[in-house]
Length: 509
Image 1 (cartoon, rainbow, N blue to C red):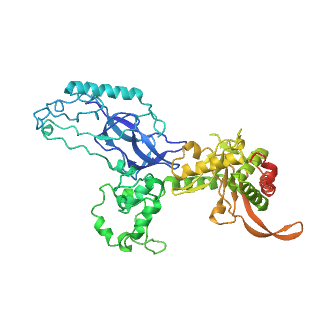
Image 2: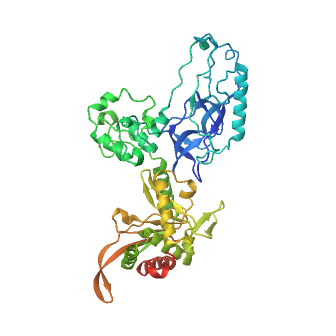
Image 3: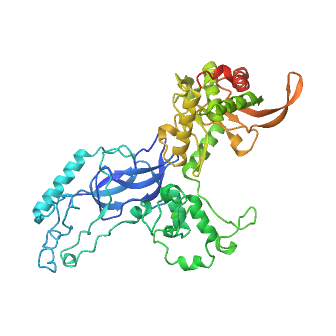
């Protein structure tokens, strides 16, 4: 019998060296096709499905849900179809109840080598299976990221009877499951399970013993959202927990649980420093791990400085209200400010650069012909920074459309590595959290980040008289290696002036 082919976890994005295994879409013994999704993994940037470059029978799964796998390490082993079989495997199968030989594979149109209504002998079936495997290998793209595989290769996994010895072949074959758990989780089945897309929602339900079949999704087309599972947890009876514990799935091990509740201080001990009982331990991984590493690196490598200014945003607010009154589609405030930022970066390009350090310790300031404007977006997975590529070429309306699109894909965990890792400058609207200002940490390896606080009514002097105006605060944190305070202050003042007098820069709204 030929050796299984081992598929290594591929590089899923720039600079990513590991990924957390969220769920397997196949099991040992399943027959899979080229480019069929085999697993869902969560990187520091997004959740992606990994398709297989091989067709055949799943021989081994290298990892369990919840484990962190290194790039380049084995992910799955696949035994090619049509491989030479041993003497035991070549033995005649046991007769079926109708005195015909029973095949180790079910006949019919669901076989890759079958012709509807026709029966084939064992050698013919083996040859056809081998030819099918060869054709799939030729057709397969070998790509490993979802969306890059060959079309038509995303069939559902089919459970096949495991290869056995001559004695075991005399036993009747096990019935093939009609549908696997993944199909039920992803497909709306009336009266059974609601549609569940997010792997985080599925994981939350599994960890807390919530039956998805008892939940009515509040999302579009019955989509089960995180809030639905949380609501089910809130209404669950405390007495129901012990009853559901024995029925937990075998794979629900402590390794799969990101948070491990502590039942008592005696069971887990007390914290040595505080003397308090430990209530939970949460592994730092995924997006949180990436954010922590990036922020620590930024603080350790970048000599940052912060400047800020209060800005009268009344004119900008009045401009938006006027556009609304005319029935026009009005961009959001962040899109207007993004337009001002790109104009400011063209005037002060030092803030649209990057510091690179060579092996010998020498450094260079790398400038770019273009602006990829990143913006901080809060998601269920944590803080991510998608970027609008070529932002300097876009109007306020075009920026608004792209910001909304990227926010949606980022919150769905579907943003690509290029969308999350290509920024040259970051815009952070922390005003949505109801705060006025913040000395933000630069998104390494960029050299600047501009923060926008909430817009509120404040007393302001206008033409020598006190008035109530719409005021916000801008803060700029910059890398002091690439520029001095004059450049940083000039950029910040440029953006502030544009907010106070927006008409001059918004002819191309």
